[in-house]
Length: 328
Image 1 (cartoon, rainbow, N blue to C red):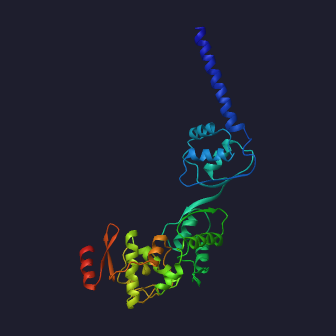
Image 2: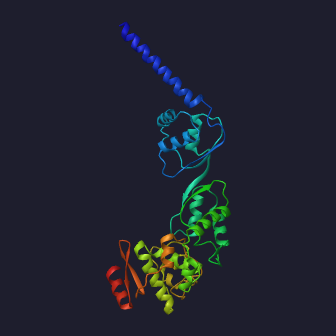
Image 3: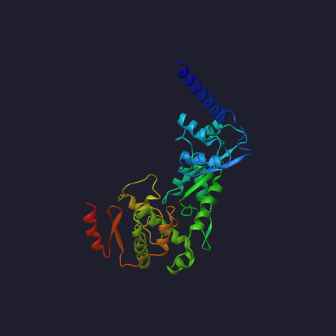
């Protein structure tokens, strides 16, 4: 009986020691960080990764207690990715609260998909709490850069699709500079010479890349589709790209109608020969590479046949047969 009581007493003592240790590590210890500390949490990080990074940067002292506390609070799945600034001498409990609430966050990750228009990018930035879509769109459509020795009309086409760590206090101008600088870095070497070999400037090649981006669905067809466009340009045939018409429609259309084909716009590539005046989207690297390196072929037509691929045709008769076959 006395032995059992002693064992219980020992267990109570151990529990008290552990509770004291845990409470001190989470709530009382304010020795970390020693100074203002910045930490970048990559997208896709697990809480285990985040805790390791915080410990490595001296933001928390006891990583085990921090992980247990987060688990108890069900906060281990709520911590955010991004860039954080932690003030010196705060408790581990405060660090976790700031990770979850975003209170210490100074920048967040934003992914811009390939093929987004400037308007869609502006909306995505607003949805992430990074400012007004209207302000972003105003900046994107009224600024320009020099690409391959030629000044662009605006930034449509040059806001490179990627994942960016955007400061919460970023201005539309700084975000535009970030994205266009990435475009310049991603532009393939010798782009000006390759574009010139096809009778285009680099901005014109990006216009063509934007058409490919919005029309192609499979990477292995992008260069072939580029070849179709070059074939049409060479013989003075209208490009007849549905996506170019959709670009100027006030609302998205899943299917371009006969009425849409009559839209009075320089972006209507059914009514006007040649390239549209600007890109119609922001192409990714595969489409840019395809525009600069088209695959030679005798094809003048293509139609979507499903599963991400198109049927290509040399003559209008072949195209008509493909339409009848695949667009039932």
